[in-house]
Length: 216
Image (cartoon, rainbow, N blue to C red; front, side, top):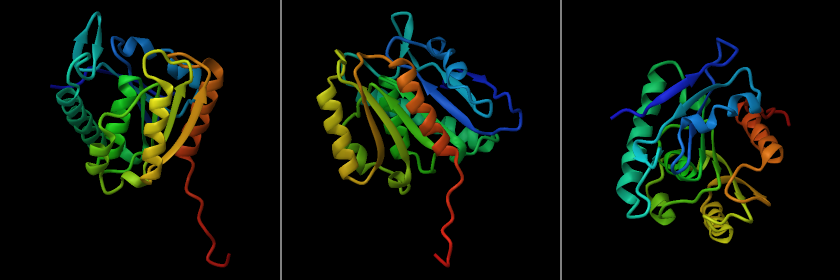
C-alpha cells in the first residue's frame, strides 16, 4: 500500500526542503491546500497526504473508536517507507519536516521518535501520543535530537488540554526536545497567532547550525 499524496512544489525550483502534511480524522489533503500560501515560504515544498483508511467522506490514520494500535503501527510503517523513498528521490530527511493535526499530530510523534534518521523537525497540533511509555521504548537512536513544536488549545472539546499537556511534560522530562505553546482555542488552528509560531519554528529548523569558535 502507498499513501495517496500530492506535491506542491516550492517556487524555488532548486529547493529540497519539504514539509509532509498529515490531516486529522475525517479530513483529507484537500483540507490543507491553503497552508503553503499562508505560511509563505517560497523555498519550501509541501507533500500533502491522505491517510490510508476511508472515514465518512475523509480518511483516518487509525481506528476510531476502537483499538488504535494496529492502525498506528501500519501508518508508521507507511510513513517510514515514504521517508525512505524520499531520501533516495532527492529529499534528504534532514531537510524534511513533519506537520500533523489531531490524528496527524499523533503520527508526527510516532514517526519523529521512531524513524532512524534525523528530521528537520516535527510539528504537532491539537493531538496526543499513543502509549507514550511504549513509544519511548521504541525510540530511535536519534530521537532525543529531534525537534518538535507542539501546540494545543485550552478549550479543546475533543482532546482534553490537561491530558495533552501532561503527556508533553512527561516526554520533555524523558529528554525529548519540545517547544510547547498553548492557545485559547478549540480543536483548530488559532489563525495568524498560531501560524506565526509555526513559521518561526520552520525557520529555526532550517537555519544552519551555529558553529562554536574554538577560541571562545
